Image (cartoon, rainbow, N blue to C red; front, side):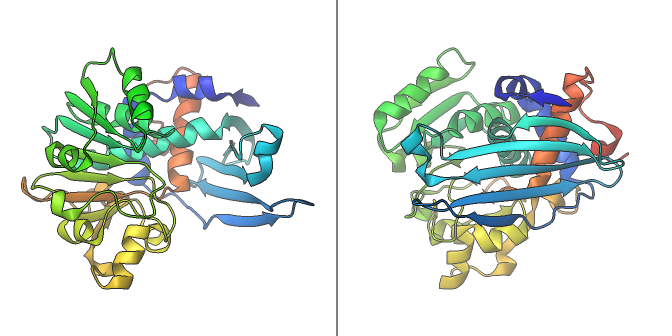
Amino acid sequence: MLILDAEKVAALLPYDQLIDALGKAFAVDVVVPQRSHHNVPVPGGNDGTLLLMPAWQQGCGMGVKIVTVFPDNSKQDYPAVFASYFLMSAATGVPVAVLDGTELTVRRTAAASALASTYLSRENSKRLLMVGTGNLAPHLVAAHATARPIEEVVIWGRRREKAAKLAARFATSSFSVSVADDLESAVSAADIISCATLATEPLIRGAWLKEGQHIDLVGAFKPDMREADSEAIRRASVYVDTRAGALVEAGEIVQGIASGSIDEDDICGELSQLASGKISGRESIEAITLFKSVGTALEDLAAADLAMRNHIGNNQGGSDCSAGE
């Protein structure tokens, strides 16, 4: 059985191919059962959590992401979160590979946002604002720059030194990069606004938005978290990766519905409908669009499948299974 560490996973998942692979995966029938959460008691400490996230495509690939969250690990100099992905054949159950789950997750998450942008942002979008400086931020910048002709990237973070450090990573890129001190001005000037933070109070205000913008909300992943206020949600045409996940986990959606700012019918569609052509996405140059991502095991499976195919030398961007042929 093949074992792919983080470095190998990164090399096997270039963003142009990964965006394409996710588009094909969202357009076909993939089974994604509800993920399961298991409490793991730790004697004398805080409980840990075991998360199991399965998905399969009939007769093709099958996999499960295994995530552990143990908040006391810092006492032993371990990360709090570990993730691994176990890929199998859905035709035989034969184990195929184990992949580093952390690298796979950040890459598929960024690629999903970029995929959504191909349907929702304006084709000539050139200015990207990255709000947040954590582990996801560099991947979101790279993925969005793959999907659109980005010429200028502006980075904003609560700590300017971290934003400057992230900007330095892109110093030799094809686009210019700078650090913003004023978030309102940076939002107003951007074509695409990507957010990956742990905000519990809104950072993006609807009053700041202008016609034609696309907002990509990735970071807030619990009902009590949010990166954009209700006015931003109200003004935008809202799309989600999965409706079921967004209605339970996405704070902007959950809180917006609870306050009466929006209702469930205001969600214009999900990524599978965009990828399959059932809905068209952006309807006008003037529209403000918004994509809310909470993640789905479908993305993990598609990424693991692509990594495996690239490892064996098939760089054509899709097996028969992933292409639905």
